[in-house]
Amino acid sequence: MLQQKYVIQYLLPLAMTLLFLCLALSSLTYMPVDFFVYYDAARQAFTTENIYAHNIFSERLPDEGLPFVYTPFTLLLIQPFTLLPPMLAWVTWTFVMLCGLAWALRFLARSIGHDPSSKFVIALFLLLSGTTVIAQHLAFGQINILLAVACLYDLAANKTQRISWLPRGLLTGIAAGIKLTPAFFLFYLLATRQFRAAIWMCAGGLGTLAIGAVLFPVNTWHYLSVEILSLSDKVDLGSNFATSGNNSISGALAYFWADAPLGVKAFFILGVAAAALATAYHLHKAQRTLDAVLIVGASIQLLSPVSWIHHWVFLVFIVLRLSLNARTRRWGLAGLLFLLMQPTDLGDWVLTALPENIVLSAIGIVFREGLLLLTLALGIVLARPSSSFEISETGTSSPARLPEGQSSER
Image 1 (cartoon, rainbow, N blue to C red):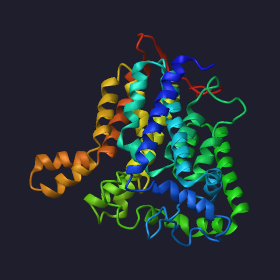
Image 2: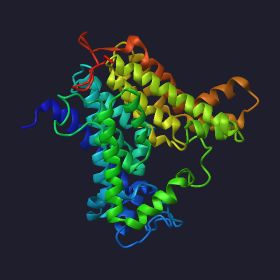
Image 3: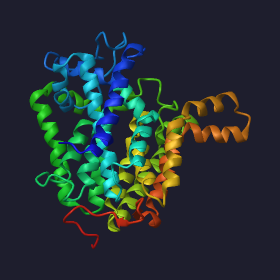
Image 4: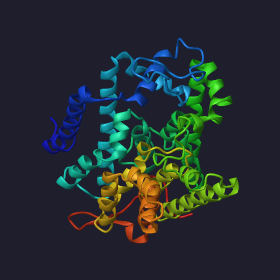
């Protein structure tokens, strides 16, 4: 029999959210198009020779269709959902994502000595579910929560938190085999000398490639030889790369310095990548593996060419981590407030309507590039030595632990 606190903590918020989504279906003016691209592509995968040669068309998508940009292995992952009617499949998918978010909150709370059933933790879950990052993720039917949770569990869970027979690195490799961006974790594993996990990560990624090649040989060849070189062009839908919705470093440079030399772009991107990996290395060495994984995960959105608002799931995890720590709670709650406001569009308007006002223009820049700047700011807060011990509501503290079998001694 389920304990009452877990009913209150998980089932009630999930049921309330799912009920709201079901009731809201009648008033939706758009479809969860990202999920239906996955859904319809998966339905067509075994009857269409090359799924990447054209947009995906169905009555649930815009008339011009939308491109499928994930790996061929993803077509297999989505197959179970194609057994359900379209809207029921989306509601089920949404429920899975909400369960992933609830698990992440529980994992982070327990990792730093918090009671996952406390009113404060439940309130955080409900508030974060209402941020634009999560709301857009659910509304569009995105997959990023699932991938972020897989990487977080795979790389940050210790022996008592993980399945004993599941090797570290494997799930992250599978995540990279679905969407390429988690592959950045390989550099983290190599930098921190976690070679066994790095090998398993490569095995997971290559395994998804092999499965895709067996089931969808034409799609796999086209993806590797053509599609992978033009992903950013397809993901930005042709005209939105420099909009406020793309808060990556590349997106910001495209707006503020459209003709920036390649060397300048490389300087910013490689500089941030090096800083993130160096920070993660020192955190890992200090036995703060959870924080190291959060830093690397959040940096992926900075480095990716296209990072839409619903991509910033690791930023949400950092906000959670800081909010649960009494020493850094003010920073976490400030980040939560910013995510609830989500003023990127307002920043766009200020820069367009009031370009002559220096003060307002500065505010507009902060608003427009808010996710980028918030990630940098909260990453610095998280990396501080003063954040190495998590103080719970009861005043107890415990250091973040390395996964079993690892040591900070080199």
